[in-house]
Amino acid sequence: MSFYHRGRLVPKLVIRQIEAAARAAGFEPAADWMEHALQWWEAGRPVRSWEEVARVVAICRACPDRDEGRGCCGLCGCRVAEDGGALRNKARMATAHCDRGHW
Image (cartoon, rainbow, N blue to C red; front, side, top):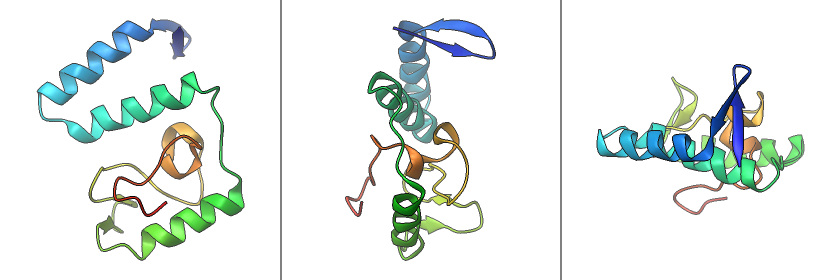
């Protein structure tokens, strides 16, 4: 399977190599995001309804790990918000879940 980025075809193997390099370099949030994005893409890009996204965001806002200033999870670094497409918003990806198991 391959993916398109800025109109260019990117093989899955390249994405996995970038993910491994990010992890090896200590960029865990970037590597985690790539892993979530690949799982989401491979599953057919399913998205949560906006009502479900709002429920997830409410749970995140009550979490002590949330970085409200950046609008993301302080634990994994992913953006969790009430707006935005799935590639920019972990709450919108129906295949993604909270690292702490809250949702």
